[in-house]
Length: 528
Image (tube, rainbow, N blue to C red):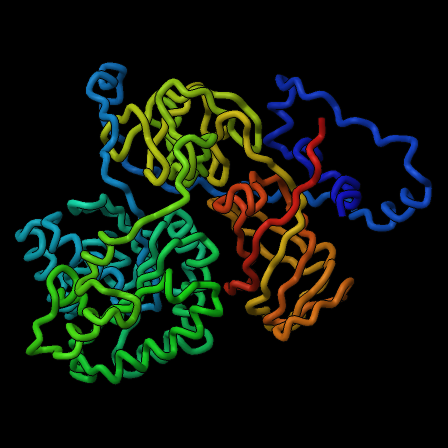
């Protein structure tokens, strides 16, 4: 395997992309060491037979996303007022689920209940919703801000908002439920620590979201792949006339979800919590539902059924403890977006390490070196940002071409950047015209914030559902676990899953479907 990885290049310095060629002039990277002549000839023949044909041309760079609102007055004087950062832990919540499950309404109501939206604004939204004959949408308007989203009642972009409690600070990422916008949802969820899977209890809506082709399944699967530590399943619309807070309906939804979430890789006892709520009336969001309306919930949460001992969504969020955030590790910030405002500002979430103004960083995969001029959280300048923070960093001396979505800001030692990797994937779904996965299968590779075209070039072994392993298999079916080699069109900054889980997870999507989820097992050997 190592021979094979080393053979066709694909390592850190192999086959430069267009963006790397320009920078390489100023880069003093010694050429790759020549293969040793001492290698046995038959080995060379074997390796030759396995060589992958020429590299594919680089795909066109993605169009730049619209710039975020610029933080105002970012001058050196602001450094004086810079804060050390809030001691409360910061959590990113992503709201996911099928179209019309009530994600935007629930996130809007949370903001309203935590006094982040004033009464007057709510009244204005109520009037606007009435004009559209959609009176129950007024809370969703807090999150869905543009005209198209409001007219259709569908979220398109990932909505962002913040609220605080005594225990934590939170950022809400309100993901779109529609299947056409899954790539947007992947971008949002790649930053999330906690997933809130919103399920509609209304008769017919739960079934359509959960059946084949519904987004409930795909979103839960993606949440696990993107590294969500906890999944809170809220059964919404319990106040509906067809449901009326019925325990039977709640248990039916939970009963169907449990085996599926277990199949996605969630440990039900530890990572998944179930809770009935009403996003519109706010029952069980901040205040517990009155026993007159729902007599069974108090007994349920006091006995710790459904993995939660807390009565409301807010108290449950406050009780979550996150592990694995290492503030002393090297800095890793996958770039989510960038824009110019007296210099290039990159947006992203600090995945590990602590970033401060003045830090010297390496931009992967181009290997250019820059200095960080300033760090902000929204508009607040920070002296330091710890893991879990969503930050804006000003990259001194970089143009917008040198900081792109999918790049990773690192401190020494930087992460690897490769165009070839060996990984373990689980095949979830396959497109209509390709019912088996073979060498030559093409898809789009999504890892952290990067997207790249990918081809499966060799299958090493497959394991079916019964646990039977076939070495040197020619193809794989849905439900199998596959160890295979993937070639990428351009180099992508990644790491092995064991070393940096957040840079070692990925999904393969094609034709609007998530066809496989996987982790990176091996990278090509480093070239000296």
